Length: 356
Image 1 (cartoon, rainbow, N blue to C red):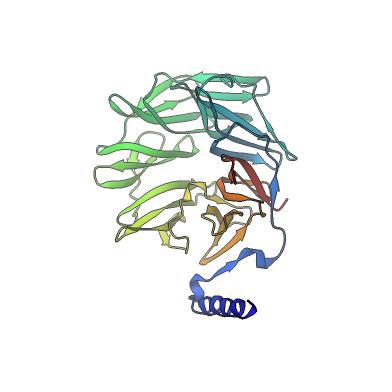
Image 2: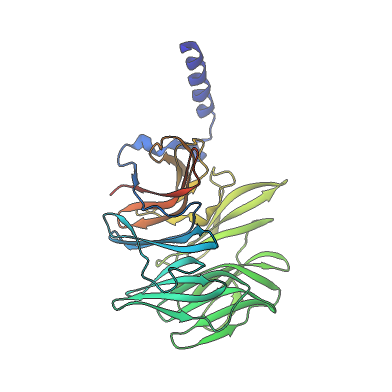
């Protein structure tokens, strides 16, 4: 057995030696502590689905999704107070059918998109408690939601096609998009006059930008035969796009960054990772959950410049799959929220933290 181990070690070292220095992949754990640790999460009725995780700081984070009841999905909402996760069941619609989606911080308030048995509204949590902002119409599909001080958007479809609903704090209006846009796959805002959306168009995937007056083609030079998973606009003006490019039927992750003057494209060694869970970490690097090669541990990638490193979450006994669906910066640490499937049981909730 020891001889077999020696052969395996030699093969691993030989493979590592031929990796290009510019694309080196090394274990982040080698840098030493701090490492990932498990955070207990109050149980929901499995199987559960996680939709979003957002944090205002080290003492406030919210996670959304839905659990399964006998007659369909039920919304679930969790809050992190800096010490522990707890479940919130005081919001309107908590006991009825539906699900919760994107979480946004608008001033001192928390805004969360809610689907209540097909009807959409926005949950608002202020110092006085929970309230709702109803949508002006019911859509067949609610694709995404974003909000900033002074504005909110909900995108989806009804029987007439694409709908972009805009809320200015007092009333809803419907916005038009450039010709050739079939539907919007996602939307995110930096300010009320700087909003980004990724769309399916007559000519393929495209990126749109709202400048406070109208939606325009952002003229982003996306790689050929590619799609977009997420867009990260940052307060500094930097914008990062994550997606997949298809070559000979094989998907490969790409990243694009706007530095205020030009777009730069890179292809870190991430395989076909779905980048929707990507965030800018407190260390300035991009972090995202990736498919783990260990059934009993989650896996995370750190992309800093041309260097990509990986780290693993804590071992989970009898786990078949550990899946951190969403990742967020929480003060000086990183936090994930997702599901873990233990042998003989349906997926239930998990959370992990790096640092802190």
